[in-house]
Amino acid sequence: MNKKLFTQIKNEWRSNLWLSIELLLVSVVMWYIVDSLYCTTATYIEPRGFDISHTYHIEMGLLNDKSPDFVTYQSVEELQRDVLELIDRLQHRPDIEAVSLSNNAYPYNISNSVTTIQPVGGNQLGGNIIQRIVTPDFLRVFRYTGVNGETPEQLAQMVEDGKFLLSESLCKYLDGKPSELIGKSFYLYGDTTRTHILDAVLNSVRYSDYEQADYSFSIVDKFPMEHVSRTQELCVRVRPEHDKDFIAHIKADSESQYRIGNIFISNIYSFKDKRRAYQQQQTNDIRNKVTGMTFLMLNVFLGLLGTFWFRTQQRKSEIALHKAHGATNRMMFNRLLSEGWGILLLVTPLALLIDFNLAYAELNALRNGTTLEVDRLLLCALISFLLIGLMITIGVSIPARKAMKVHPAEALHDE
Image (cartoon, rainbow, N blue to C red):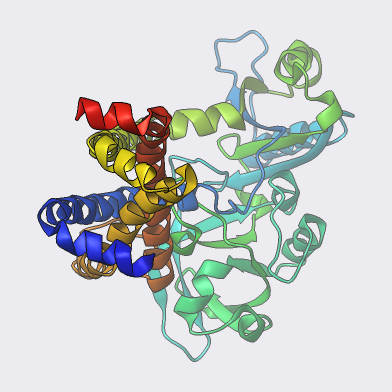
């Protein structure tokens, strides 16, 4: 059967040559589309390193001197004391699980603080290292976890004890594995007069849903209480069973319970809303890209489907002739299908070679710092192969089944 099949393919080389060229081009285009969609999807579903469910950002306001309730502060410490009192009252609220204060630290933040890190006896590393200065409960609010299974509570205690944490993605730039770096001393913020002990390595905390964890470098250190002010980030985690209408409930209590001196709650935002607002432009760009790629893939599908549909319909007389010589419907179906898959198999190695060169020339999507990854190349090529094979199967099977229902004599007479 195989020998006869390849003999037929060789004998019909003119028509099969154009079909082979079409399948080659389709294979390369399909690989490019699949590769692009794969990179977008794989990045989006990576672990984020934090959890924003049931979390809120509370903005603190300050009464001006024209308000009848204005209080004249004698020192900055009085203002700080009122901020800390507000935090304490929120912590004792039964529907709140944890409360934190931080500086440029919460997820989906348009503001950043960057810093440097230097192993004692090593070289300083700077660049885009996000500096997250937080109170210990920040780890509980956003549920950070460690690479060795440390819980948010354990990490919070480490920060409370004055230890600092860094993200796993930063380890490879410090020339070490997490297990090798934990317990070592580092200089932070360019200050070589004071060392900091690394107590744990965090699972990488991503900067956004569309940026890979490998490029989100961060350091977590304890918030100095002498820097407390109303402009810092006040974040809370609400107990799941109490999260319904939380914003309305806390606003209702804000004037009676949460106005302390000149400090009051001015606004509350859900982190789901902040996430949506922060990523709106990126989300629109990704949606347009996926829509365009999907539309292109659909056109490729329809073109390929039409090619094999028309090709099979044109061979009604050949099907009738084979049936007249005793061929069964299954034999004819397998023969037509094998022909399409056989040509696809013949052009696939050449298509894979073209795919490799396109990736080597960096003409496809970037991921993990490169466009050429062998496992990704083979996976996307396999997906493309199977999708094209599916279109061949559909394009052959439907018209072939219709052709096989026609009596051989009738088909030959029409021919």
